[in-house]
Image (cartoon, rainbow, N blue to C red; front, side, top):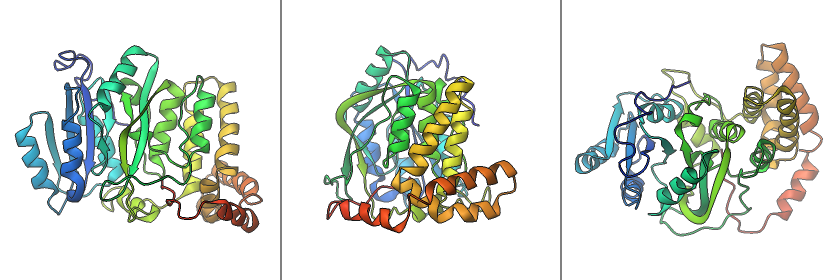
Amino acid sequence: MVEAAPGRDGDPKAGLNGPLVSIGMPVRNAERHLREAIASLLAQDYTNFEVVISDNGSSDGTESICRELAGRDQRVSYHRSDQDRGAVWNFNQVFALAHGTYFMWAAHDDLRAPTYLSACVAELEAHPDAGLCCTDVEFIDEDGKAVPMWTAMIRPVGPTPRVRAGAIARSRYWLDVYALMRSPVLAQTTLAQPVWGFDVSIQLQMCLRASVRMVHEKLFLYRVDPAKTTQAVADTLGATASQGAIPVNWSAMALQLLGDVWRSPLGAVQRTALAVQLFVQLCVFNGLVGSGIRRDVFANMRAARRPGRVLALAAMAIAVLPVQNRLVRSVVRRARPRGATPQLQA
């Protein structure tokens, strides 16, 4: 776990124009949309923020773009690793380098409306019990044009951890890792772990520790990249020099989320009920996750070394396989609207 960066509490820049916001941007070979993404951050009408860029050994024009922008705007800082350490390391690195009361991850190709920060900061300042604030999302293509979603987003809002965890378990779009978060709450999580779906894990841990605020305006523009398949994403997560490649592994993701529930600060009875709820809603009735578990659960069982993990995976297989069979999946496919946008991957 990466600890909160030194100086985050009582940072001299915080409080000048409201609390300091840190925007962490992990990048690698990101030149295509990078200027536009950073420009949308620098155009925020909330001014007391920093943009922390961590370059994971880029070999294209990313370095020159970042150095140019950092030289022109003192709010931008650029940090470079000479080798690719993987996206998991880089996500944690930008948080370790941040100083803000609030923190937000930003991808190199997504955009934010000019009022994104001011709207989210206002919500979090008005609700000290909240750990995260998200907004409605506009999906855009490579040219910035709006594209439809094939299914509605389920957001992790609600009065209790049970309701928020249930929303995450039923979702197929997990984008709120890019929401504005309260840094001390984020520092209590495990941050990014070398497992498929680490972004979902972070969201769940935040939702188990604090409430979530929602701004009902499309202030976050998420770019849908046809090349961003599950395997393409997985290939960027780890690095051979550190933990090695991180495969697409839905069973491992489910076990990680169940572990997140058990490691949460909730009471034992509440954790048990939440773990059962998550198991049923995520593994059995979430078609995206369930179909993935059907494909990889037996390989994971053969590779497992601990008896507890074997038993957990066996229970997963027994629960999932009757539902994720060919007949049920064919019915779901036929019910999907024609021409719908392909589902986003974790």
